[in-house]
Image 1: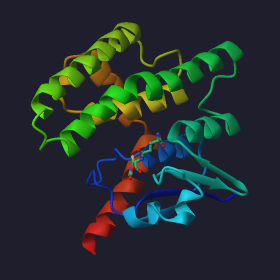
Image 2 (image 1 turned 180 degrees about the vertical axis):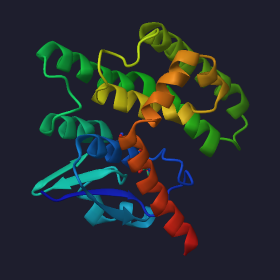
Image 3 (image 1 turned 90 degrees about the vertical axis):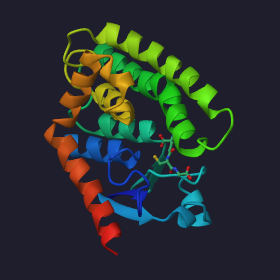
Length: 216
Ligand SMILES: N[C@@H](CCC(=O)N[C@@H](CS)C(=O)NCC(=O)O)C(=O)O
């Protein structure tokens, strides 16, 4: 089986592993599935060939034989569904892992993403200084709720699952920020995710792409 994903030719995050190909790489590494990467420029992402794979002109995409997918959450779901290791065998536990996947991308990620957009793209706007604290308060509320649920547990629901993989991926955007530091159990949770050998392999692979693009 040949799997090809897409990633930024030159990631704007400077190789920090915050682009969403990282969560797909991580999932593939967790299940021991090899993959190829097709690098795309910002220009190519908006051209018909890529739009046929990703209607919003973004990365990542995933191709496996005649199957083409987009949306990192759906891609991670597919990988977890097709291989051992990212979903528990018990049906109820599996349903709960899927619930955490959705919680990551639909409850936690939107305000965290809004903060990134505000900091990157809205800095010059007159209203940015007023807006940022509002967005950060929304994030703080969600972090507080998540922190309360995680408590002293290692992972969100028993063993590490695709739910943790997506949740850690989403929280990583806050790494080193005061926001995340306010919740030591969440900081430790993120660090546990980053310490997984599969995460390290995925991180190193995306960093190698950035390093190569910087050398040119
Ligand atoms: N919901 C999508 C979001 C994809 C996304 O925002 N991709 C970013 C990189 S992390 C991108 O391609 N940005 C460039 C653009 O939107 O032009 C997913 O999870 O796959």
